[in-house]
Amino acid sequence: MKTREHRIVASSVEETLRIGAFLGRHLSNGSIVTLHGELGSGKTCLTRGIAQGLKVPEGFYVTSPSYSLINEYPGRLPLFHVDLYRVRDVGELEELGLEDIMGGNGVTVIEWADRLAADLLNERLAVGMSIVNDRTRALQLTGYGPQAVDLVERCLEQFPWH
Ligand SMILES: Nc1ncnc2c1ncn2[C@@H]1O[C@H](COP(=O)(O)OP(=O)(O)O)[C@@H](O)[C@H]1O
Ligand SMILES: [Mg+2]
Image 1: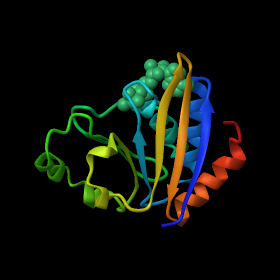
Image 2 (image 1 turned 180 degrees about the vertical axis):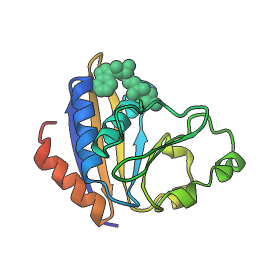
Image 3 (image 1 turned 90 degrees about the vertical axis):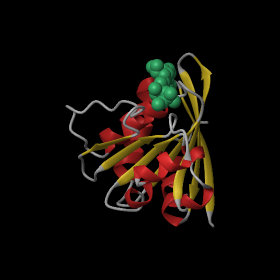
Image 4 (image 1 turned 90 degrees about the horizontal axis):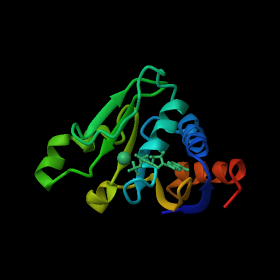
């Protein structure tokens, strides 16, 4: 599969939100974004930005769906925000019906996507997040497949800093 990588450094919460909003403006129906990285690395913060870019109304405050596992928000496209941190076993995963959601009508953002079987993840944008210091996060973007590669290339133009 065609891939493309780009590293961005976000030196404040606002920058992470701005990067997320840019992604949200350019994602399309059926897009999948997987977020990787330790607790506190900014996955939920980036998702909040993606929600802004998808025009989720401001009355909805995006929080980690740790207990519900999936939150759905209305927007330019529906946003499905999934957090697999608390998933215990494969059975619980199957109950979620993720396969129906992914590639369906909307954008799916998945925190802790490493818990999914690799074959569930095909074309997508993967964002590996890491803590640089108190205010700074590094975002490693990898696009898998032509659409995601195109989006990574747009990010390269928009956010050349690394
Ligand atoms: N540049 C930054 N980008 C995102 N979050 C940041 C940044 N700098 C500091 N933070 C802080 O890091 C934490 C990130 O939390 P969160 O987005 O919930 O992470 P995760 O979902 O990966 O566990 C927040 O407390 C946020 O204020
Ligand atoms: Mg989170």
